[in-house]
Length: 177
View (cartoon, rainbow, N blue to C red):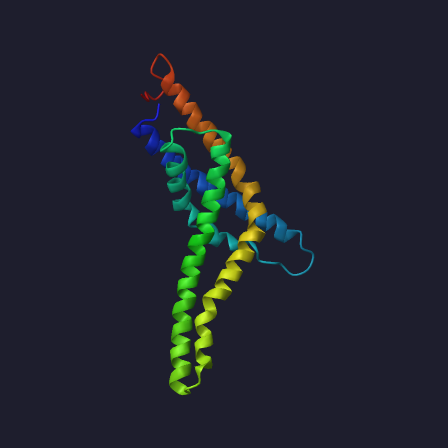
């Protein structure tokens, strides 16, 4: 049932599921991009913001599914939402940290050249990053749900099949106990 072998298999398959979901999201955004009649939109590059999901989704799978030893439909939707929000927060932390660093350097340079306090305005760069992250998160939520939900439910079906195979009287096909 809920063994160490299932944990390792679940985490490994969660990494594969995250990569598959990112690939499907890229294909979906590329298809949306192709429907634009004028110049290409280049929105498929936004998938790079989902790259942390390759690590976040397995961690969330462990925290939500494996630790509670429950894997129903509601837990799968919770897994999708938590991993999406965690990925957005990670993107904000990285982007906000980089913006704060760059803003501090620019503020320092502006204050060194002129002693005007207006150079401190550069320290508000993380606010722009937060707004950008919120807008991108809102724009990508529906394509993410369309691409990631089927993959998450396929992953759920695979794990539940393995759990049921481990409950079989013969010991199952891979011997989970």
